[in-house]
Image (cartoon, rainbow, N blue to C red):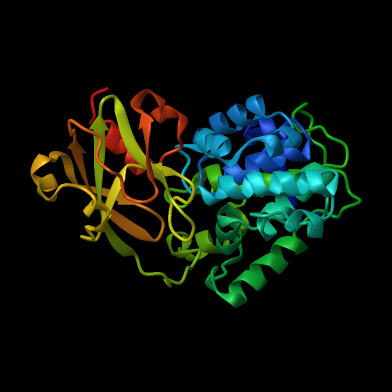
Length: 356
């Protein structure tokens, strides 16, 4: 029989589950696309990008045929651009496989797909009996069962993965809710995974959880012990680093200079104007020595926060009368063509202060 915890969550989901477009299909491409977009992105923001991608590339074959620049340009504004590069690479993997893989190992072999994403796609698209374990799931399980083992420790990852798997509805048991959105044959495991994720996202939230209206309040260890605010526990392991960037927007005769960022650093494959980093003036060696006197400051000490680092940026405008020789890697484009190149959010912030 289904355990009470899972049954209560599914009852809650019937009344409170979010109506999302990728839940109205079992097309693995549409589901995979939504999962990649929603990594590190809130549903409200990711929804529009999912619709944009599905409209432009409605099949995985069409996405695979696109260029990386096209995909990065469509992704612009979402951040964590490695997701877009992995998405594009995986689309070509899928085409080479002859179709979307329908096993956990096959799905996990796709670039950018880990255990959580494989379980989500496998259960949603194919009904595979695999439990999802994301931040929402960690929080719900930790609070309900009173588990204080750190969720990012080796022991914690194993403990929560095993518990989540044990709580899955028995695969042979059908639990179909009555609304057309969820009334899909054999979708019990997928529905449960959606239910626990939605429960963590909208009911058992990180701050100000809705304990007073929680259907699990009677069995919740964290509520009973007054530890809701303490759980889940997470070890602090990463130090935030700081970097100083100086961008110079070069404008000459309706053109500007940009380059494409290389591998091994943030924003791989995106385009940026002339960059001076950490006081390194080497990009300026090909310019006239009094260049600094011709720079017009746009904005200084702009703080831009990434996951594991803080960027401090200064923005300048330089408008020489004749086109100077550019450093290696930079090239001229028409200013009217800037929108055709995918750029980091920090560069977009800079461009907001430039009149076109």
